[in-house]
Length: 82
Image (cartoon, rainbow, N blue to C red):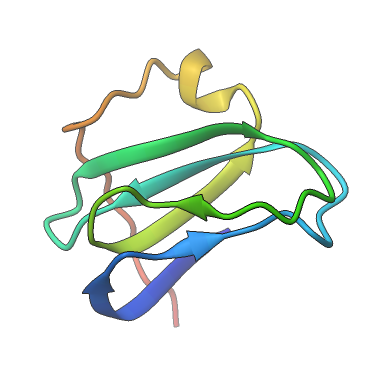
Protein backbone atom coordinates (compact mmCIF):
# COMPACT_ATOMS: atom_id res chain seq x y z
CA UNK A 1 0.00 0.00 0.00
CA UNK A 2 1.28 3.45 -0.88
CA UNK A 3 0.49 6.38 1.40
CA UNK A 4 0.76 9.83 -0.19
CA UNK A 5 0.82 12.74 2.23
CA UNK A 6 0.02 16.39 1.50
CA UNK A 7 3.16 17.53 3.28
CA UNK A 8 6.81 16.61 3.61
CA UNK A 9 7.23 15.86 7.31
CA UNK A 10 8.19 13.27 9.86
CA UNK A 11 5.59 10.50 9.64
CA UNK A 12 4.98 7.73 12.14
CA UNK A 13 3.27 4.36 11.75
CA UNK A 14 2.33 1.56 14.12
CA UNK A 15 1.15 -2.01 13.59
CA UNK A 16 -1.75 -2.15 16.07
CA UNK A 17 -4.33 -3.64 13.67
CA UNK A 18 -1.97 -5.27 11.18
CA UNK A 19 -1.99 -9.08 11.06
CA UNK A 20 1.33 -9.74 9.30
CA UNK A 21 4.86 -8.25 9.34
CA UNK A 22 5.70 -5.43 6.95
CA UNK A 23 8.62 -3.45 5.64
CA UNK A 24 7.91 0.29 5.65
CA UNK A 25 9.78 2.17 2.95
CA UNK A 26 9.85 5.93 3.56
CA UNK A 27 10.26 8.02 0.40
CA UNK A 28 11.04 11.73 0.10
CA UNK A 29 9.45 14.28 -2.23
CA UNK A 30 12.10 13.56 -4.89
CA UNK A 31 10.94 9.89 -5.01
CA UNK A 32 14.14 8.67 -3.33
CA UNK A 33 14.14 6.12 -0.52
CA UNK A 34 14.94 8.05 2.66
CA UNK A 35 14.72 5.34 5.34
CA UNK A 36 13.25 1.96 6.28
CA UNK A 37 11.50 0.20 9.11
CA UNK A 38 12.07 -3.45 8.23
CA UNK A 39 10.14 -6.41 9.57
CA UNK A 40 7.63 -4.36 11.58
CA UNK A 41 5.83 -6.87 13.78
CA UNK A 42 2.04 -7.37 13.87
CA UNK A 43 -0.12 -5.82 16.59
CA UNK A 44 2.69 -3.69 18.06
CA UNK A 45 1.76 -0.19 19.16
CA UNK A 46 5.27 1.26 19.30
CA UNK A 47 5.96 4.20 17.01
CA UNK A 48 7.82 3.50 13.76
CA UNK A 49 9.22 6.86 12.63
CA UNK A 50 10.40 7.87 9.17
CA UNK A 51 13.64 9.20 10.78
CA UNK A 52 13.67 12.08 8.22
CA UNK A 53 10.92 14.16 6.59
CA UNK A 54 9.13 12.21 3.82
CA UNK A 55 6.11 12.53 1.53
CA UNK A 56 5.37 8.85 0.80
CA UNK A 57 5.36 5.57 2.67
CA UNK A 58 5.24 2.23 0.87
CA UNK A 59 4.17 -0.81 2.89
CA UNK A 60 5.27 -4.19 1.51
CA UNK A 61 5.47 -7.70 2.95
CA UNK A 62 8.36 -8.10 5.39
CA UNK A 63 11.57 -9.18 3.70
CA UNK A 64 10.85 -7.65 0.29
CA UNK A 65 13.07 -4.60 0.86
CA UNK A 66 16.04 -6.95 1.35
CA UNK A 67 14.94 -9.34 -1.43
CA UNK A 68 14.78 -6.43 -3.85
CA UNK A 69 18.13 -5.10 -2.46
CA UNK A 70 16.67 -1.65 -1.87
CA UNK A 71 18.90 0.99 -0.32
CA UNK A 72 18.59 4.55 0.94
CA UNK A 73 18.98 6.83 -2.08
CA UNK A 74 17.35 4.43 -4.56
CA UNK A 75 14.59 5.96 -6.69
CA UNK A 76 11.05 4.68 -7.01
CA UNK A 77 8.42 5.38 -9.65
CA UNK A 78 4.67 5.06 -9.53
CA UNK A 79 1.90 5.95 -11.89
CA UNK A 80 -1.46 7.18 -10.69
CA UNK A 81 -4.28 5.28 -12.36
CA UNK A 82 -7.63 6.83 -13.17
